[in-house]
Length: 406
Image (cartoon, rainbow, N blue to C red):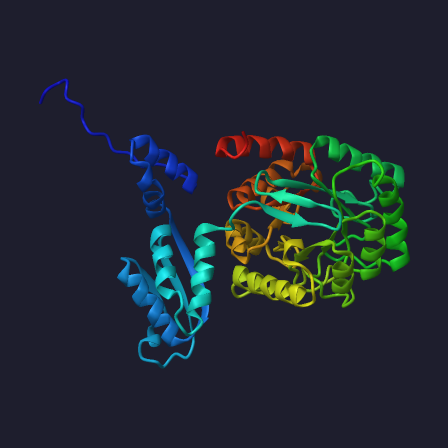
């Protein structure tokens, strides 16, 4: 062998996104007209479609086979004995796009499935915005930080620390200075086992803080409450978003208030109530059950007149979840992006971190940042945190590595 002859070298590429794939293919020197098509052949995704009739299953499977991939269905679909089946479809972005083309215009609800597949492949076109009662917040350029301000006596992390108005206002100003994009104010603890407080007590805690903050900060404020009367007064006092841990379930008037005030709203999943949510929570398929819950609550909100651009979804880490549930939710957090709404995750200082690391609340920063890393990897839009400064530095570094932050 000629000693000067180059020996072919082979290595696996670690490409985290379609952007990374395009860059590497472009560096080869490919004709630009082929770039996008080839890049989409490199990105592999897995899609689950639920509650399909046998005819739909068979058509989708044949469409998949025709483009060189496949789909998994129940074994009795082919015989017609199974009246309904879920389906797992897998392939490159290009293959899924071609399947969507084949399903377009077909009966058995396949046309709507075609549109949904196109959304999963291409995402939303153009800029994404969240509407609040006072502004539009651009999403996607960076992960937004929601700073936690508990004006409570018994919150799990900092109960009693900011119960006085002056201390609460000071902490809010500090968080804005540290990089918070939203301040989330709550007057009632939702820690496991907590007892509800009266309406008057909650209003007494949050309204004075809101009244002073609205003149001092220019970032949006969210009110963490499931009581419509608190939400109404808070929105009138300068809050722009309602963060409802009940997913608009505990107070039937809440949806009316959000609609009338044109507020943003966080729809969260919780099994049970704060008082009993950790008393033997159980799921058969935790991600599927939470996904379906959020899908139903979003559908309800829109049917009641809340504009879709005002809705945020939150799987509710730590709210009626076992340790293994919280870990699985985080590990599969990207699946909730398929709902098509901004995704919020609040894992900061939660008890599952303490259980794993055997650490008290005040020493859970590193564990919280690890959870934040997984959430960011999954494409979340907003993280709800106590440690704003450290989280801001972490996100800046993460996004610089990932290439989103310039």
